[in-house]
Amino acid sequence: MIKTRKNRPLAMLISVAVMLTMIPMTATSASAAQFPIVAGVHHSLALTGDGTVWAWGDNTYGQLGDKTTTSKNIPVQVKVESIIALAAGAHHSLALTKDGTVWAWGDNAYGQLGDGTTAQKNTPVPVYQPPQKLSLIKPPPFTALAAGADHSLALKEDGTVWAWGRNNNGQLGDGTTAQKNTPVQAQVKGVIALAAGADHSLALLPPQMKCGSGPLLAWGDNAYGQLGDGTTASTNTPVPVKGGNSYFRCP
Image: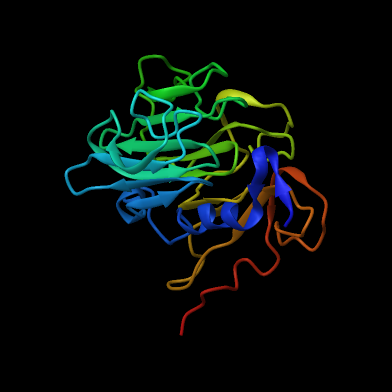
């Protein structure tokens, strides 16, 4: 079996993306549509109706968020509350609160926690919120999450995409291949849904018809053609998926 960093089976990483956010949603209600259960390579997270998060499995990097690095074979409560959405990377975890704040914990070797450091955390820490150009204006809240193996994505209410973590294949979409330990804006706007593979990212734009879906964009690793642009060349900026505006058309 082909494996990646830290012995990550590719098949398990694919399941991370499947459990995330590649579903139609509006920017203002994106979080409500996300799944209440997600999985990393060897850890699992579940969101309950009261906004608490429970985790179990491998805890080598603190990805369970229970102030330990001891693995658990039964769910333990994560030290975070008022959560409405979750995402899981290979060995890190993300949670979105009702007020639009993103919390992160676990492996941080590539800055995938977005807290300005590369130190792993066994309790949730807030992801840095980039300020507005006019300091008196409150930044729009985050509304949706996605996590790749070692990178993280968040969608804001204004349709912008913010990314942080590993960027060796351009999976942050900011026009560079330098890793980031705080969020940077991907070169795409008007997004309504996100998804992340191991080292690539996807975004869905609004429908161009009364029904159906809008264009699909992709960026990052493309060794297997996972960007769908007709090539196998990786890219650090979003490119259209060929035929991406022809899927999910009206019946």
